[in-house]
Length: 278
Image (cartoon, rainbow, N blue to C red; front, side, top):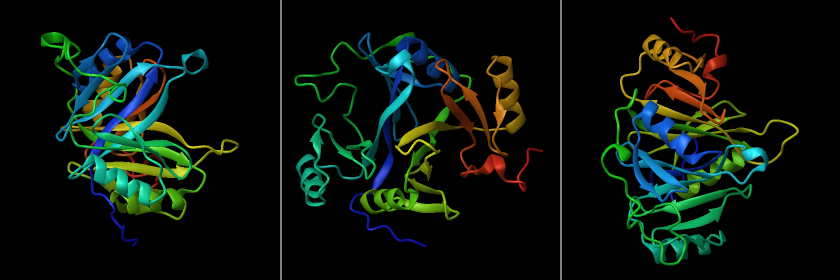
């Protein structure tokens, strides 16, 4: 078993930056289905949050042709964040940190994908813009929270496709102190925090040889395989099975989202012949 060098200690996914065709439509989808609360909205982009410690989706307009949805970057919260100390350490490692407000640095991983190293609190959409504040952009009452069909507790996993899974595995373990919880010689899962978030690192699909977040998975409270299926079908979301502990749906932009139990999910679970829904 590989042991991380643990330059930093990751505590949670701080946020996932998600670009879509219609940010308000996506905001409402994630609030209504997953019980997320809107903690920032400036009329062009928003942050919907969940879990403890708080994770978030930053939802904004897509710049892709045809307004294709894309996960632009993801951010990891670390314990005991100090702006200058983190900058010094990232620079020492040759990672050329770029400032992103008072509470985050942006780096590139081994495949050139943007990853942010963040404080556990204080980060918000657009924080890198000089003079940016949250004043007047924090919703209240029904715009801030509404009953969700499910209650989301964590990022079950970020499915991250890369050309060299072992190189990425070592990068995230060594820099963020993530632990290796699954590996089968071609893919792995590195996990961190409590409740646990994870990154599933798998090979890029030919002919593409660039990093991409293939899908996102969210853990929900009190997962029951058949009850969750029934609820998703009632909502017209056409769930597809993904092992004993997850269903896959498409969000309003046809991006793949998994609705998961808090435990029991692992890379390739849907293809495991020894695990079939009862």
